[in-house]
Length: 219
Ligand code: MD3
Ligand code: FE
Image (tube, rainbow, N blue to C red):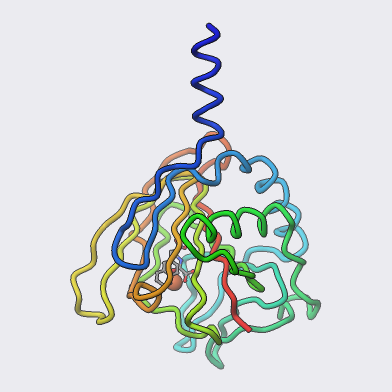
């Protein structure tokens, strides 16, 4: 009994062994688990202030992923194109502040991956329901591409695709689960990446959805 208790405590507290996906990309399985309850409670408050919405691409398509943001800057897309903006176009108000629990998690992950000075000013919140997907793309709208992106997966599992610097590079598939964190920096920062259509399922805390957080230094 005592031994089991101690091994469970060790599992909770242990920093997971970082796995390298490719040069510059570090997978930290389960890194978000110790903070998950604070993170989910804070996310609820953010999503009440700035509700999830399906943005429209410059070509007029409705994205299958619903999005919102917290932090000084938020990623927005509409018929005029996409950009970072300091206010929520739905309310005209600034985006909700980045909760301490989220900032702490992002900085802990970046530090574990060798980016101890990461200070994100934007957190994009992506909500996938079954069938939602994200096509292959690059993230290159952030001012300093020397800063990494930290991504946190919550809820239903998804298959993440990541390719190379060229759209034509054959992507690898990595299953990402609740609590997994990936840090993308250095030579991986401009890799093409996407998410396959989410499969049906029910997660014990989040129900029939996956939420992905991406922390960025945008401005
Ligand atoms: C690799 N989101 O919001 S996170 C995005 O799961 C985005 O919602 C996906 O791609 C999601 O832009 C993937 C993983 C990720 C995020 C940014 C990256 C991987 C990246 C930037 C460069 C290289
Ligand atoms: Fe991306």
